[in-house]
Length: 269
Image (cartoon, rainbow, N blue to C red; front, top):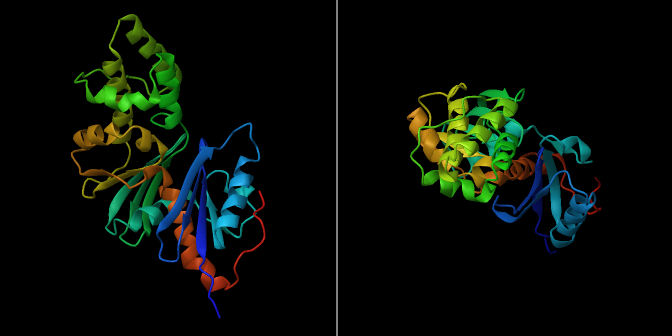
């Protein structure tokens, strides 16, 4: 009898983007993709999920993120659990995970096996999040994809003083009228975020791992944050997919123990 090779699917439905990861039975990623969560193509996610079903024999699927309740899947986990799980595999040590998302920041103190020892969530204000960066950068016509390189070329001490998006927009518009260079504006925006992060409860005796969509597009933040905190700061592998990977790994840990059946019907959204 031929034993069919099975795979596990993780979906992270964030406020800005949805990430999908498929892993094999050894926990190695074999597919990943990202798409806007809010898009005019309302069936894009369903099309992607059904395509994955056609390509892989999915034994179990786990959803995480803000939109996890919209997927008709048996296994659903919080972003905290999935981020800790996804960051544990390649780095099985005690650490602080900082997950910077589109609209919130999560601080997770995690053990070597991905267990959560403590956590903090900044979900009442968009300061320091992807939405904050996008809105401020758009005000002065900075391209998101260029900001990290621009900031790296600057040595300015300028920083936005306000964590409020509305006031920060006014402040950086003043910089534009003062003819502040794009390099200095990019670094100033980053330093505002670093200052915000440094005020959050981050343990001084643990290395820091950054994950989430923001650090994927703004890697120079890690350098500035390390200098501000005086700590070792690393960027997780494929940082935007960490929570989706963790969701897939949750599948492989829990689903087989519950059922030996392989999911064969199309996915439902």
